[in-house]
Image (tube, rainbow, N blue to C red):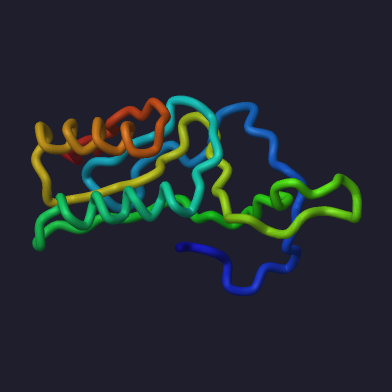
Length: 137
């Protein structure tokens, strides 16, 4: 699973997901998906989509993951009394604002990219929109 190697602070405050993301354009690939609603993506969700992309993008293609889970999520063990400080880190999350580019890929036609976007949306549980790079004239 993805996690930061050496975080400066292990237990940060939660990030507000109001507003729209600033990185809403494709940087690397020909196709990509952007989030249509704000959420926190867990390291397991990102890993699931990475496996999906590695199996569906052909050898001559390439994919990029534009989110990284750098925020910890703490959780108390079951049947534990409250108090005694903040709980231990359970897993890592990536805060995602609406409009952020999540994943990009190249080497796949448009019809298959639409199918990939549908599969990604089913895996991470939020609405995503397929984004296509504009041709340069």
